Every structure is written in structure tokens, then in C-alpha cells.
Image 1 (tube, one colour):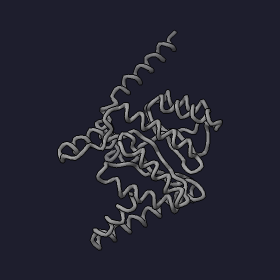
Image 2 (tube, one colour):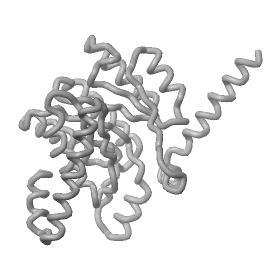
Image 3 (tube, one colour):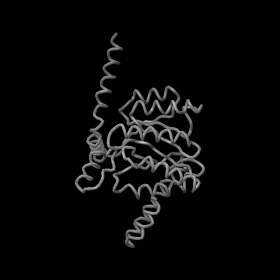
Length: 253
């Protein structure tokens, strides 16, 4: 399990590395404490596979401390990884065992090309799903799992996929749950998929826009990396332009 790997990894750290880990934990506690007091969430982003384990451990430790009475901390699960649906189930079991609410932000993932290239160069099995259909299958299965366990899971459906968003609302309808259920939230990137965001809001869903914020020198390279890493979904631009063109024609009539 993740926590067993963490315990084993901690044993191999030097004293200075252990001190560094403790400082990191203290900083996270400070951040989460302020967020909890202010009534806002802390969404911990997902990273590359080779650095994800400590991120997962830290997130679970924070959830165990801060997600008792309300949901403050969320982990980000990349479902283009073939092991993350199983990890979601394991995280749920940990939440039940340790008596906290699991915060799960579901994304497909942004590092596919980088992950596959590194796996090829270093000669290990790729952690990425074999095809888009597999990613879609696991993503929608993860959504369904979360909706089935809303007593113990708070989910953020962070997707630009029209079907995944529609499917989530259909699952809520099927269970007789309101679209604005406190444990269900939707999100899209600012400047993208407004057609999805606005329709979700119109149907009563809790929905937000993800907005990168910071100094230009930091934000622009970040956005450039996102564009490069998301070349696999380049069709998104064509769909957006098609919708804009359709609306321009509608208004000109």
C-alpha cells in the first residue's frame, strides 16, 4: 500500500531529508489551517508519476487532519494513468478506516507525452493507459464510484469532456440527488469550454473556472507547458472555434 511504501521510504532518508519532510508537513498544516478557517478548499495538484507518491502521502495526512467535519483538502487523480482508479478505491478505504472525507479532484491528465517518453527512455512499463477509450472508461467509472459514495467522498469533476460532465448529472438524477449537492463540484479552465461551464451552471450545478494566477514570468511558462503537454487534445481548439462561428452566424441573422 501507499502508506507502507511511505514508511519504507522514510527509513531510507538521511536526517537532513527527514527534517526537510517535517518542514514541508508543517508548511502544509499552516496552509490548510488558514484555508479551513477561511472556508476555502486546498486542491493539491497532481504531478509526474516519479514524484507523485509523496504528494499522495502528504495529501492523505492533511485530509486525515482537516477533512473531519468539512472538506478542505482535495487530492488530484489523473485517470489517464492505468492505476489511479484502483488508487481512488484504496483512498476511499483509507477514508473509511481513518474516519475522514476523501476529497477527489478527477482529471484525465496533462503529462502523457512526457510520461511515455521517460518510460521508453528508461525502459520501464508506461504508466499511461493504452488508448483514449481506456482513459474515458476509467474516468467515468471513477465519477460513478464517487457519486455512489458521497457520504465519504467529495468530488470535483474537472473535465472538458462533454459526456463526462453530462454523465455526472445523469448519475445525480438517477439517485434523486440535487445538482448542487455539497459534495459535487464541476470545473473547467478559464477561457475554455464555456459552453460546458454555462450549461452546468444553468442546470443548477456548482461550477467554477480554474484560473492560473501569479507573476507573468511564472504564469506564461506554465501556460506554455500546458499547451505543449496537452497536444493530445488539440481537437479542443477546433470545437471551440466551431461553437464561436456558430454563435456569430446565429447573432447575424
